[in-house]
Image 1 (cartoon, one colour):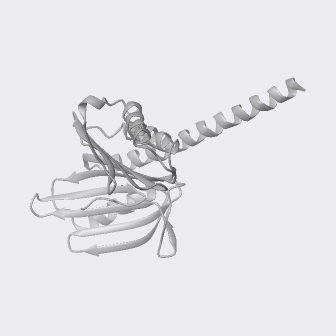
Image 2 (tube, helix red, strand yellow):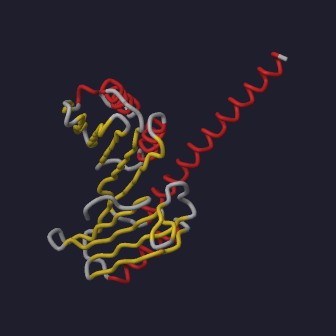
Image 3 (tube, one colour):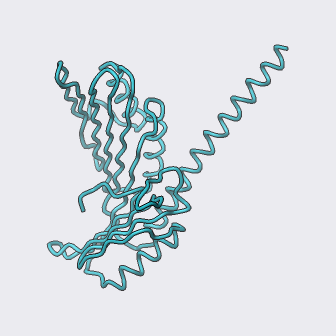
Length: 245
């Protein structure tokens, strides 16, 4: 009887490991495809940005909040000593702010405890030199947050530029290529003289959908001409662009 029980436990643990491995592989494949799509635009890389937020629905202590911040940093390979910590902890406000820049990467973690039943964490990472590590950073952040919060929302954006003003027909060609490479169906488009924003539903990107105009969307592409810089900027994000552009 004990042998059967041990076999059952082993099989359950093995299946859990397979599911976790499948989820990680799936996430990596999605973001590798996003990177390949960006490369195919032939834009010069500017930066990538990952914004994550999640809610905690229990009476979390300040020590637990600090431990969570520390674990996120450690899992990302960052040192606490390189960043600035700020705390506001009184009867009216309970917040922990952590921010800093290490080489070419900026990170900000904000923890806000609203009451004994509700707290929020927001993580913002910006890298302006290397885009190929976006898969590893996203995976580490996702896996770490899932240990503490329910249904963490993670928005990822890759930005690039063209050193000239692109004609509308060229912008349309780039947008069409992105949609094709991401196996995506356009849902909505906002277009002005120097600005285009397209929201779409990609069959490659799964599990990070939002509802918009009665449709699922998980891909957002923006192109904007900057007269001051004489550049055309491009943003490819999932599920939406969370930057002022």
